[in-house]
Every structure is written in structure tokens, then in C-alpha cells.
Length: 379
Ligand SMILES: *Cc1c(COP(=O)(O)O)cnc(C)c1O
Image 1: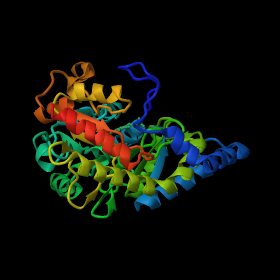
Image 2 (image 1 turned 60 degrees about the vertical axis):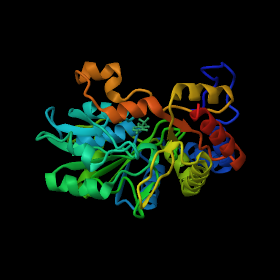
Image 3 (image 1 turned 180 degrees about the vertical axis):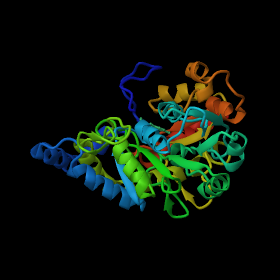
């Protein structure tokens, strides 16, 4: 996620990076080196004891019943949907303002994605926005906890239950985020996580995990990620190769104990941003009873591209998540057809700006970023 050069100025790196992975890894270097050494010493690289231990530890940290490590966040979503056995006419409702993986995973699982709009304050789906997109063909609702901010899962669950819909949570940005004291990812039938290096919990490469609530779903996921094998070389159902490697599992085990502290730092940064930005700049709202893990701290500003350019010119690595909603990208027309009107998602794409919440920022830097954003937003 840390750009080597500023795409606008061409200058190397940023004085205030969006995320400083080098520093995160430096502070963990002993535990990380030991983790890698352990795996290499054992010479067991796939489906081994590190994966089993990580699955147990990650599940425990979320108070989830089952956890299955997979190769990416994309696969976590895809395998969750595959485990539900959808067919080509089955619809999966998801928000338009998400990372493209959420949309593409539905195709990979052989079903039909249907986009819905979102709430302008939370940037997330609500029962109202989901309801407008649900049809007789809907089988699954797929809320995304965008930037680590929890969707209203209590309401979404009762809505889904009444209509006989499954719930798959995209928690790829929401490791350790909570709603009413309960970890997101554990509300739905499945919760999908990504361990892409820039996520709040990141591996040394791609990785992902699914948490689920029933033994049946758990066993389906175990088969799906490993060629449908019940025992080696005896395939009982469809499957793919999507396993979380031992190296990544060991790295994640070394980093997991620091997740809660990292999320606490991000929350502190967010509180300081809110204080320094004042009432004029609109920040993403977090629901009452919810605790975001602030994968990003996102504000809405007029003339966003100008603000972005100015910040980056001053060495502040602000970003945009996401510059185009799913239905305004060329792939949508190719796979789904004419774009629907989803005005909130479209407005957010024009106005959102992600500010750095790197763990190693201090108050002075938050004040600097917030001060600049405030002045630039005022014109
Ligand atoms: C990162 C991300 C994914 C995909 O995860 P990968 O590990 O990159 O495949 C899916 N959904 C959202 C919201 C994400 O941020």
C-alpha cells in the first residue's frame, strides 16, 4: 500500500505514509523471524500445524466457532458463497462502493451480483438500502464493513431471517471491529477476512480466512479449499486450491497478539482526527454500540481531487477508496450490463478521502493532516 513514489509529484515516498509496513515489521522483527525460522526448520509448508494453530487462535480472538484459512480475501468470499451452493439465477446483494473483489467473488461462485446503494453517513448498507435491491431471486445479502466500520448486523440478520436469506459478511477490512461487544464476521453464516499485507492484520503476501457457525459449513469449506478432498486424493465434492500457507499462518500468529493494540491506536487517531477536523468536515459515522477498527479514516470533502493532490504534494499519503463504484467500472457493463442509478455510492466516489491512520503517527502529525484538510475543504 505504501507507494514508492508519489504519482503526482514523482517524489520518493511520503513523509506521512498511509501505512508504514516497514516500521510494523521492524517492531515485530524478533517474533516474525522466529515464526519463519520455525516453518523452514520443520519443512512443512502447506496444511500443517501453523495453519491449525492460527485458525484456532484467530477464531478464539473473534469468539467465532470455526475458522478456515484460505489463500486470499477474494477466496474467503468465493468459498463462502460456494459453500451455499448457489446457481446462476441466484442473486447476491452487495454495496456498490466496495473493493471490486466483493463483486467478482459472486461470479466466481457462479451466482449473480446485484448492487445496492448505501447510507451517506455510515457509507455502509442498511436494511433500507438492501431492501430496495432484494428480489424473489435473492439468496444472500453480503454487507461490507467498509473501512472497518460495522454494518447494522442485528437488523440485517432479522431482515434476512424473515426472508430466508443467507448472510455473508465481507470483513476484509474489519479484523477485530465490534458491534455490541461482538466481533464482526460472526453475525452472518460466514465472515470473510483478508490478510493482504496492508490490512489491519496482514501476512507476508496474500492470505484470507472464513469464520462460520456450523459444522456442516466448516466441513464444506475444508473441502472447498483443498480440491474437494475428504482424505488426500479422494475428492468427494468440488474444490479448488486455496490454502493459507504455513509461512503466512506463522507470520499471522506472530502478529495476531498485536491486533487489538493496533486497533486501539487507530481508534485514538480517529478520535483525534474528529476533534481536530471539527464539525465542518463530514467523517464516516460509526453506529452507536459499534467499534470500528479504522482500516482507513474516511472523510467527505468537496473538490476532493484537489485536496488529495495538495496533501500528497506535502508528503501526506492520502488515498481514495474507491474512486469508482463497481457499476461505474468497465467490467460492470461486460459482466452485468447497463449501470443502475445508485446516487449515494456515486457521490461518495466523488467526495471520499482516506487519511493516514498509520500506527506510528503522533498527535502533531494528525493535527497537521487534519489542519490541512480543514483549510483545503474550506476552499
Ligand atoms: C481487501 C479486500 C477484499 C479482498 O481481499 P484480498 O485478500 O485482496 O483478495 C475484499 N473485500 C474488501 C472490502 C477488501 O478490502
